[in-house]
Each structure stands twice: as C-alpha cells, then as structure tokens.
Image 1 (cartoon, rainbow, N blue to C red):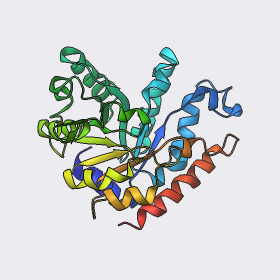
Image 2 (image 1 turned 30 degrees about the vertical axis):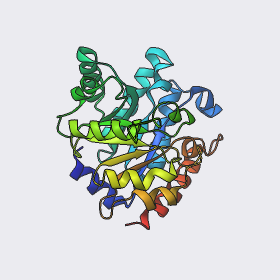
Image 3 (image 1 turned 60 degrees about the vertical axis):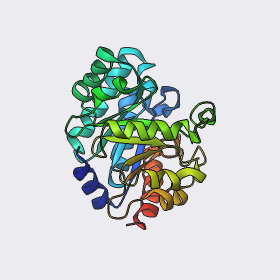
Image 4 (image 1 turned 120 degrees about the vertical axis):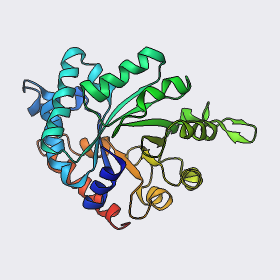
Length: 270
C-alpha cells in the first residue's frame, strides 16, 4: 500500500486505528477452542467486528511462531482473509527482525512476498544493511524501532552521546536511508514528553504508536502531539484493550465497541 493509498484509507474512515492481533491461544474464549483453527476463528471474528473502524492490523508474529507450523498456517489464513475481504486495510508484520545480508533479504521475501504484508517492524541496531533490503519496493514499508514504550528503552535508546540521545541519532540516520514513502518509525505512546519533539524532527514520516490503553498511553495526548492535519501521519495501535475487551461469547462485539470508541475520538482530529 502506497503512502497515497494509506492516507486515502485514513481520510475515508476518519481513523488512524491499528488493531494488534496478539492472539494468545490461552486467552481465546472457551467456545472457540473446539474449532479446527481457534486462532483463525478468533482473528476472523475480531477483524469482522473492527474493520469498519480500523485502517491497519498488526499480527504479533511471536504469538504465531509459538504454535509452530499450525501458528504459521493460522497467520497465513488471517492475512489471506483480510486481503480478500478488506483490501483497503494496511497489514503490519510485527516481527522486529534485524539481521544482515542474505538473511535480511529472505526476511523481506518472507513477509512481503510469501505472506503479502505491507510492512515489517525492524530493529536498526545492526546498521544500514539490516534495513535496506526492505526499502525501495513500491507500496512496501520498513517500520523501524525509534523510541519504544517499554521501560527498558532507557537502557540504550535514551542514553546520551554528544548531546543527543541514541534513539534520536538512530532515527535521523535511518531516515537518510529511505524516504517518507517507505520508512515509518515506532514511537511509544508512553513517551508523552518527547512526542512533540519527535514530530518536529520528522514532520512528514508516519509513526506506528503502540502503548495506548493497556500500557498507559493517552490517546488524546498522542493525537495532539503527532497527528498530521488531512493525512493522519500516525497509526495508533491497541492490542489487548480491543481484542480482549471480553473473554466471553460476546468478545467480538466488545472488540467492535472498543474500536468504535477509539475511532470516534480520532475522527475529531480530521
């Protein structure tokens, strides 16, 4: 999906919502456990309930890898279903890959070609040759870790060197390798004090922003500091707060209500 197509989808739905499909087999409602593929059955119901309000889905690859070959099949079925039924949705492989040379190229082939994702989350700490294999493909994006929302981000990302924090140096360097048409940054919603500064430093890049909801990030604050008028410029992710809004048979309806509530807040910024 190109930048122009992504912006068009955002404007049409008046939404920058990304739903994280962190589908934990142990948390799937009991009535789905007897399905041939409980993970896919759960994902399908969540997608159908939330698709009117969201512009992106982000499967967290670890939850699928943990189930072995069955998990990979569930992931492929989920992606194929979204592609078939909701072709205007942006798909993110939350894989956080970060390797070099032929390995990076194979990861790019895996997620862009085999699975048909629009984007992949990446760690930049092995340098340029770990990122460039994901760049330069029309409609495909590298979503590079910038300033993450976990407490451990202070251990490396927020260290200072030459009057600049490590994450600032990394983001500025990575931005020079690609463009605003193929590179996004992960910026955690819990870093409220730095959101405005990051947007000023990168006025046109898209940000993928996790941490709203269950992790404590405030939706209004994030939008106020990062939203780009008439474009969006952000994809705000909610995972547990939406997909596990209920553990009962009404789980999909509850997810739909949570997604709708977030979209209504987002709609006021257009």
